[in-house]
Image 1 (cartoon, one colour):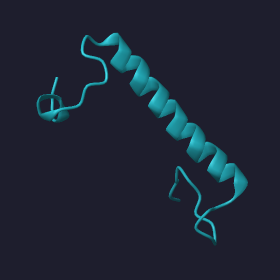
Image 2 (cartoon, helix red, strand yellow; image 1 turned 180 degrees about the horizontal axis):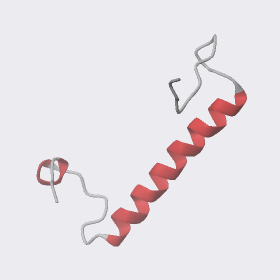
Image 3 (tube, one colour; image 1 turned 180 degrees about the vertical axis):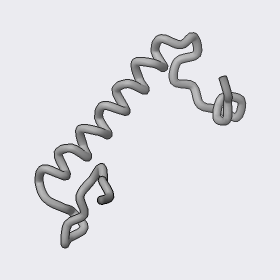
Amino acid sequence: MARTLFNVDDTATGNGYANIFRFLTIAVVITLTVIKAKRMHGGLQVNRKTLWRKR
């Protein structure tokens, strides 16, 4: 039995619960990205040098 992160509904928008969890997931990831970037020395700077930076 396959497990999925998001259920697929008959329509493209899905049901209310699925959309709540989608938006919550996106909000958490954006928040964590901003927090991590503020803790780093360079902040949220994206340019040619930092776009493909590997640590």
